[in-house]
Image (cartoon, rainbow, N blue to C red; front, side, top):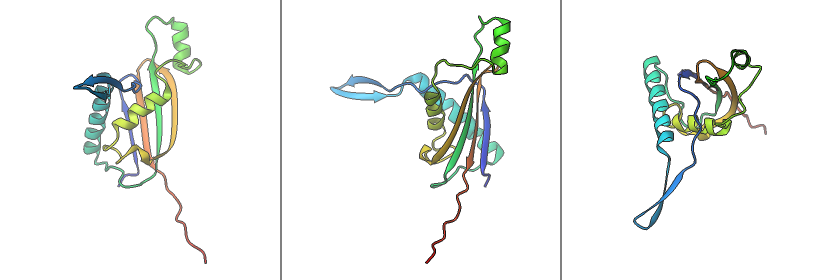
Length: 153
């Protein structure tokens, strides 16, 4: 079994939207907005196909995992060439929405049942936001090797 899965998804980073509420037949129903569901489905499908193609197996059981995510935000088209170069080089970082926690949430939820059984397996996260002329997300998930604990008497 491969102990690491790494991929790039060439769509702009997107944050998970809050659930919406509506009344139906006198009951309150919560649902995930369509743009969020659609993004999660595209990401999950992309990674599922990639895993089959590369022969990667899902992390099973209670395997503790580390997740490294880099979100590359699009440089606005109205940005001057001088500022765009500073954004591309990392001198100017994106302090804009979507927030890092919402971007991470949509990615981890999309990979539930695909890369791992449940995102409760994620024990360590590293996240960064930068600008790029090519918006995308880059994700690396690896198993955390835990030491064997021996009982001393």
